Length: 120
Image 1 (cartoon, rainbow, N blue to C red):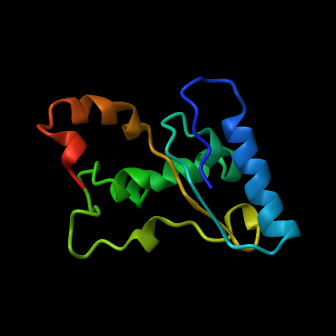
Image 2: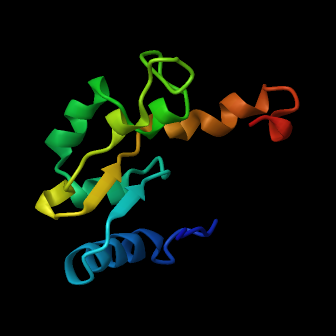
Image 3: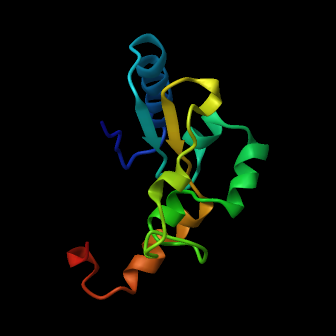
């Protein structure tokens, strides 16, 4: 399930947080929230700012996308599971790949990549 809209303020983050929580708590579904928003609001809805600050040295969605200088998905030894925070917020079956402010620059990085729309 994806929540996508280019317009801000339409309730994407609120919808994701609420529906993910309801699916995990009331319907016992396994849910993985992948926060692709550089504003990190969904991430900060599930974890504290202090916890998020600590993640700067561990895997986030920026690592999954190969944007960080440390271990990334471009490395053979990278495991996407390293980016997943399990049972986030103490909620069983609710997992999160947190966002990173580095996503703010993703569009600028992609502009300089030749034939970027044809790459996997």
